[in-house]
Length: 232
Image 1 (spheres, rainbow, N blue to C red):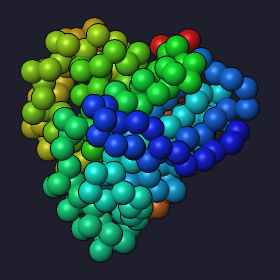
Image 2 (cartoon, helix red, strand yellow):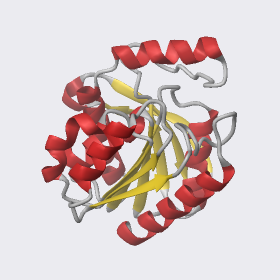
Image 3 (tube, rainbow, N blue to C red):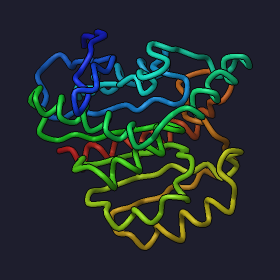
């Protein structure tokens, strides 16, 4: 496995998107886009890319804040950095974000990937849902995605498998919002929702105060099996 920082071309000639890329030891026709939380491409996101590369996937984590805070790396366990991240979330345009994910899909295809999946966390979980609805990505996974209940009108456009990990005690996604997600998505044969009783937002972080070991192991195991099936 090897890793490096690169840039990839944005759509419509907007510029170049910084990204972290982890390559497997052998060429692979399978690739995964790791969509960050509101904390940027930090050590935890790079670790997730490295883990996918170790399993034989070409993995890329684009810098979703590149338009206004390029290169930012924040620690959710540091209060000042958490508040800084909330500020970036408020500035972020998710519609542009999906275009950046599309740019990553195109770059991966150009690298020889025939099957591409994405896995996102928090804001990235929302983007994973939007990517499933708006692009031709082969499979998508969202962890503790936010605001999905407000975008259920797009669910009819989901053409390929989508899995969502939903912690029931998520203090950013209310029980009412979770109920709407189930009501709107459970009937969709392309979508699978997994509830994690009593767990909170960020339970699958690679490290830090938010991680729940048992929950993370369960969710990550499901994600690995999901991609093994749908990116084969």
